[in-house]
Length: 102
Image (cartoon, rainbow, N blue to C red):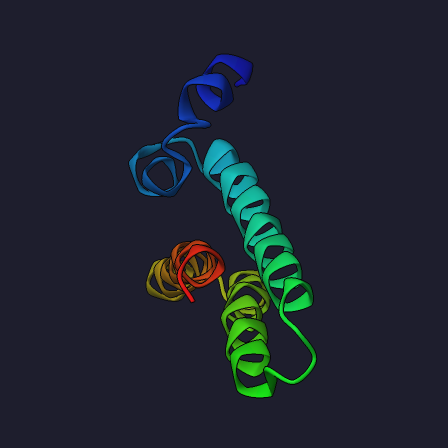
């Protein structure tokens, strides 16, 4: 498990889809979801207070991770869990893009 996470740290969004073990996939999912929320917090708090629209967009991107966690916990179906993984991936990718692009 440690070797898997060590190899997957550079490709964590991809690891979320390529890992076959459900336990490892769940660990990677929660780490990515928390990472998406941290990116949103850092991005939103780094903006000036008069950039209200940009801050709301950033918080909405972070909210996608929270929605992904809720969907993942409440559903046992594979399709719903895939939707949760997609939400988390969009949250992390969107948060990084929003953080570095104005």
